[in-house]
Amino acid sequence: MLFLLLAVAHCAEPRTQHDLTAYLAVAAGYRSANSTAALQEIHQWTPPDITAAVSDLQRREDRLRAVPISPDDIGFDIVEAAVLMHAEAGLLALQQLSEAEAEVHLRASTTVFEWSRHAAARVRERASRQRARLSRPSTLPRGVEAGAELQERIDRRDFYQALAATALAMGSPSTARPFAEAARRAAPLDPEVQLVAGCVAEGFAEEKRLRHLEPEVPRLREEADRALRDALALDPTLQEARLRLGRLLLVRGRLTEAELPLEEVEASVGNDRQRYLARLFLGRLAEQRGRGGDATRRYAGALELWPDSQAARLALAHTLETEYGPRAAPPVVGATLSASRKLTRTADPWWLYPFGPPGLADAALARVWERALGR
Image 1 (cartoon, helix red, strand yellow):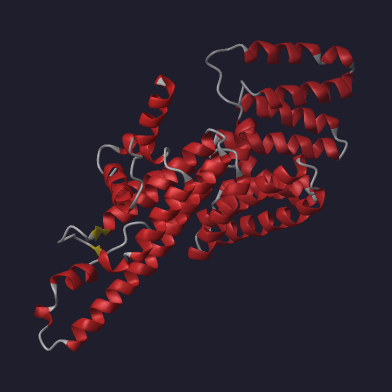
Image 2: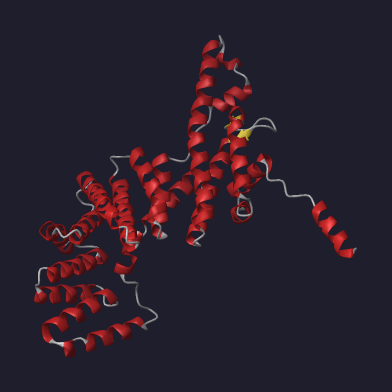
């Protein structure tokens, strides 16, 4: 009997309401200083709850206001906070390898974002038509006037660029791909957008290769090639695009074409990471041409630029063994093992290469969040 009563009492407990009112309250919390609590709360919502709340929000388009003037009004800043709340929740889930949850939140983020752009335009257009019909514009109803003042604070290019760059930085080019494409549609003449699109296509091609989906790899590499060339055409000083184009040509077996961009990056000044990677790739190029001495020189040069590099040390050991026999390699391999035990060693840029240009994702996210939320 006791167990039965406990079960009845449990069933009688009221379920937390996950309706539009609660949804907007969570978004308002995210808009304020309670963003961490809001993220924890929205993570508890089920996909059907989120879908229902978003659908209900879309049906309330006529209540959107720049400044709410009645209890039923919906502040446009809260809608944009919901966009970024879902974006952050999705990216955090992606970081935790919860791909299903990431998909739910990222889809909600982009759905609310796209709807909000069109809804704001429609609200302003309706207010404009009503204003035109009035002999005295000052008599425009307060609700209509407040709707006419809607202003978007999330830039389309910045939003999709931030999602693409961050998803790539978290090791998921497949997730990043639609966002990179959306950013290119929004800003096709932006060299940084083209760079990220090239990095995403390059990473997606590598993902397909590792999954033994070889027929899809050439098309993706060609797509990456075009994006990187577009980036360079828009900004010839963009060395990251030049470096990645050279590496892409190298893996595609176009050695003669690959050499020039890599040599140009290697000869540049001011960025040891890029120069290190260029020397590493030039060493591989020399190996493929059967030039062991040149490969050894390139790998040694890469090691000079990045002493903690494991990739350059192992590549150097391999070429030394090929050129001078098995006794030449152990000292270099031993040095690699010693370097790997250093607590202060810097990360090898080669291991980080698939995650996109360093710092780009953080900068892109900061730009969007600062403009929309002031943080």
